[in-house]
Every structure is written in structure tokens, then in C-alpha cells.
Image (cartoon, rainbow, N blue to C red; front, side, top):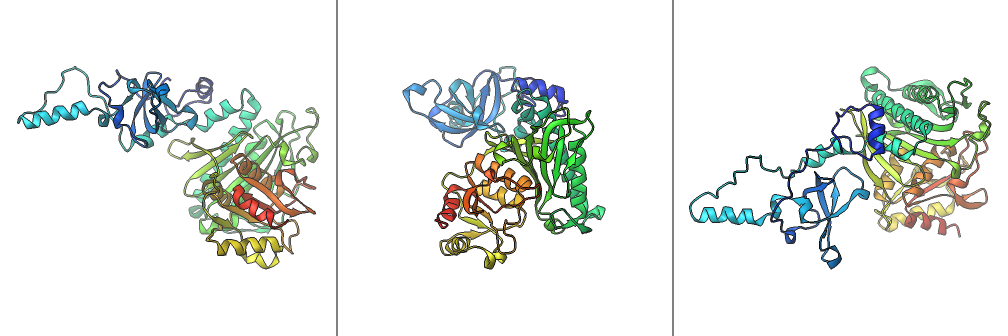
Length: 466
């Protein structure tokens, strides 16, 4: 692990990611602390643990008394790193003043004799022990950046890495535009409607321009589908045309933007199937969600967070605006027991829903469930992934297919929910109950009903259709 300035270039990040190195290493470890009393180690204790000869701030997650783990009985989690880097360590790899009772005894003896305990004259500075500020500092300088994650997760696919870098760039620019919207006079309606009939806000147009420009100029996209544009954007220039088709909602929940409620961007990515020497067609993207290769969303709220899945787990990053980097937060999982009892839906439409949905909402109210509904899909699903519960946006008498769009709302959120350990269903739709990802869109702005969240609650809804 080598030191480097915080602002690293893309090439430096490439080399570091290839070697699985953090952004910046702390100072080199000194000799292991002596007289460490492992009997004092408890779960949740903050201390320092070494890895490859370097001490990092860590937290104890388990202590074993098994003979098999006699040499390394303590499992530690390195703060700012994913759980996959947790290690079992022994006394020679941990240090904390709280684990050195001999020092405390020496001080006590010195007091009892009316003298201060003598200090060892080693000629070196005393070792620093962890403080409550370590998690903050360690995460900022040592946490994996999104650039590193992209390079590592794309496994040598340079074009996919370029696409993901363009997506994170678009997310940062949109975040900045939202932050400055008030002083810049960018709140309010633009005076027209989008391709799906919704009123368009000024920030809808700005966010759409940002996403289209970032993706079309990345050199790796062949076709773009935006909620704000009636027709697909086809990249005709061979020099800029690439293998990916991206569907996106540049600013989901924008009806809330003027009152400063969290909004977001949602995207899904396909790899084109048509010949590379020709322009893409809509057939390249009108495919089931099971063929999506990347999905994600960026939420703009109290913090800007980017959530990504390649079909193997869901990973959460938060934007540190002071350094302009998305930093790794966690591997997201819906609570296995279903989590908090929360149902999220727009009950103003209750009268027009089918009977099973009405019955489910009635049961929630009588069984201690809490109602939580923001009105921005990104916000409601993000909370559901973290806390548990269920998000419901069913079809109704006015909208026979529901109101949420398949390609850039239903598919990506369904893929993320399933990868986080949840379920995503349409409920009864077109005569059958099925997965959202298996719906086949008829056109680029097609819609479908949505029931997604933890298995506990989604299963309850689906059983009511039996």
C-alpha cells in the first residue's frame, strides 16, 4: 500500500485498483504492542489492527475461544473497507491502551508510593491510539473510491469503465446543479410536458441535457432513451458510437424539487445486439430486464449517493464534495427478516386499486405497519433497501399499466432490489403474476405496476392474488 495525494489521476487509480490498494495508506506500523491482554477484547471495541505491516483503525466484530483460532482469536473490521477485508488476527497485530493492563498497574504503583511511574526512554514517540475521529479520517483517505471500484469491477472492459465514469460524472454535475438551483432561479416549471405527459421542470431539462451530453460524448454509447425525450437518441457518428444502450430518468421525483425533497437519477444499461458497423435501433433496448448488464441510481438529498449493481450484489457510494469523489459506503442488503414494518404507497389512489392491494394496505394499518411515502421513487426504494418493508405503485382504473416506466424505472430498481436480497413483482399484470424483470416492453416509454421490497412483505401481497 503506497501513499498518494488524495486527488489521483485516472491512470494512478487504475494501477492502484489493479493491486487492490486503498487511496492513501496511514503511517507504517511500529513493532506490535507488548503485553496485550486478549481477555479484555470485546465485540464493538475500537482499536488498531495491522495488515501487511500497516496499522489501521478497526473494530472488533467477533472474539473466538476455539482452539483452532488460538493464534488469531479476534476478528476485526477495518473501518472504511468492505466486509470482505475483515481478518482474524492475534495479539501481535492489534494494539490499544485499553489492552495493556501492565501500564495501568505501573501507574497505580507509582501513585501508591507517592511517585510517578518512570517513563521508558526509547528515543521514539509514543504510539498513537485510536480516537473517535478515526472512522471519519480513515474513510476519507483510505476508502475505496468509485473510480477504483469501476476499474476493478469492469475487469478489463475499458469501454464499460468509460461508460460508468461518464455516469458518475453526470451524477456529480446534476448534483451540483440542484445544489445551486435556488440562487440561480432554476426552480419552477419549464412550461411544457415530457414524452410521458408529465409537467416538465426547469431542472428536468438541465438534468436531461447533462446526461445526454455526458453519455453521447463518452464514445461508448450507441443509443439513449430518456424520460424527457419522446424518441430515442441514436448516436450516428461512428467515431462516438459504442456498444451500449442506456435508458435513464435524468431527474426522478422532480415534482418535489421546488420543496427541497430528495430526488434522483435512475439508469439501466444494455449491450447492443445489432451489427457494430451500423447505427443502433430501438430493438437493441426493447428487451427484458434480465438482459441488463448494469443498473443503478443516484440520489440527491442530504447527501449525494450512487448505488450500482452489475448483477452480483449492490454497492453504495457517497459523494465527498470537498474532494469530488464518490467513496465506498457499504454492500447493501435488505434485512433478512424483512426489516422494519413499513409500507410505502400513494394512498390517494386507493379507491382505484384492485382488491388485493386494498386488502394489503388495510392489513398493514391493522397490524402495526408505519406508512412512509416521499413521492420520489428513488427515495422510497432507497429507504426500503436500507430499512426493509415494501414499496407499492400498482395499476389503477385510470392507468391500466401503472404509471412507472419499465426501461428506466421498473427494470433498474427491480434488478437492484433482487440483487439486495428482495423481490420485485408486477402483481397481477396482463393476466398473470410475474417478475418485473421479465416484462417485455412494447415501446421505449412503456409502463408496468410495481411491488418491490423484502420477501416478507412482497409475498404477503402476492398471496392475496391467489
